[in-house]
Length: 136
Image: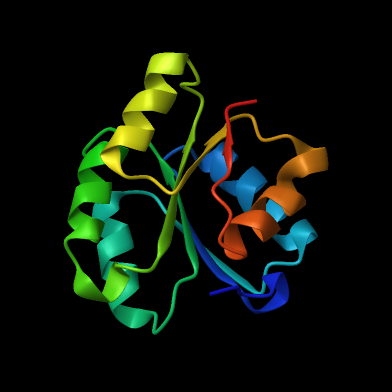
């Protein structure tokens, strides 16, 4: 199922406040309809109970309390989140990191820092159902 970017609901899980500000601004510039920043997996789970629909979750892999892989497993166990696209968003972009993310069940991989010139097209492609695996 394809979602137009201007109607998309994107949730970002990012524990670094500066990165969160930057990502939110990139999403606004890209024309994303609604975005929400969560600082942890726990905050994400709380937010998801209030959101009727989420089209994409950009999930940081390295967070202090709970890593992105643990959060992914929790989300994949929720029937109501079975169709939600979940993309690893991380500065860990070595080949082993990418392989681990794919084996874990992420729908895509975007390396940080995000490429300003490609960010919008990456988000659009993900929302259209394309698997985006771009560490750089």
